[in-house]
Length: 497
View 1 (cartoon, rainbow, N blue to C red):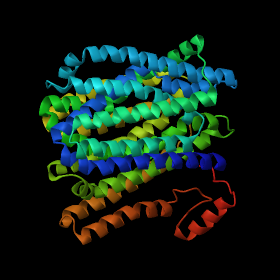
View 2: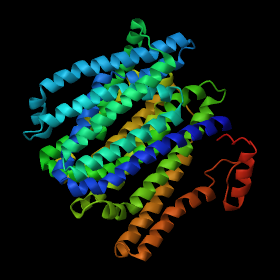
View 3: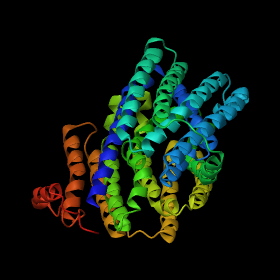
View 4: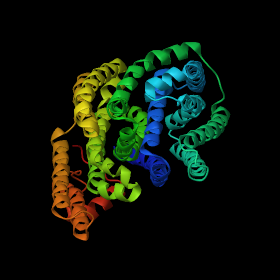
């Protein structure tokens, strides 16, 4: 088990470096965006980005998920080459054909999406950029399935640096606004896709199998409904907010959501990038169930630490990073961040569906949750605006997590220790309650307030140690910490839960 934990930690750490760099670029650009773009323009960018995400989910046909399942289902290098080549050709062709249709109807689509005239040229550029980026995305999936996390991150970092420079040039110096951002994305997608394609073809060659493509589509197709459901949960609130409050409110909400979503990018996404391949490796172990349960406990504790830190200091972060007209965005961040904790847990709980190839169950859950979410959006956004959108997201993710857990356990029972999870959740909630009280007792942005809030955050990991959350052979308390580290360093096994 310890070797699996170490491998998981190694690849997750590497992916985290890439995500940290991505988020760092996002942070660097926040002052630029909020200074050179109005809330309305920021809202336009967000709506464009979300529309492209939805487009990708539909035309991708779950091919990204199918690569992982079929690559590890065969030992033959020829068949594995067919898996990669088939996914690459299918994704590129479908994205191109559908993209042309959308570009031709861009005038109508623009009115429907933005509820404002004159934005069709933006949509056409975004669609072209997406089509080119489809090639790069398939190549990155190949790197992930091969557990080449270092190459994956290096390629991502190079793309980030180029994109950062182009964004600053087009937006800050050329004052091109939304157009500048789109041009930057187009250029970086083109460069990265060409470079990655050359690398992958040189590494594996290129071959296509029609029967293999059919099998992959059959496996991945249910993920389209899953993706649409996920899109509704994550992003459809902007469309409702635009309808009820306008693009400017969307821009302010989008900035707050970006900080809340940051938890997903820094903690959830890096882990899942590793876990999509690692879960199949763990499946072959004798005590796979215990390993799955133990890894989840540490994953859950890490997410709660991340959301606690973000929620305690978000008002200060927004005050420093954004211009005053965006300041109210801080109010939705703790709600959205907690929602993404539950989203991360739900994705982990999909083990039963994925390992038993019952992916249609995931589609059913996402569809049902999506319907509930749409109802919550109508009721809560109409009455409470941005706060209503955030609360609707939290309620939806909570419902999805519970449903996923129950359904997955029926297919493949995993011995999760719910008591331990309840303890860490309660501790995190208590620490946040203390910090929230401190923030309202003292004047904002005072030394006393900062110190007390920092202590509230520090109390969480200390409480985990003293409540015996960590493994019996690891850490029981502060006195046992050095001995626990030495034991693990010598190769000692972690105790079973």
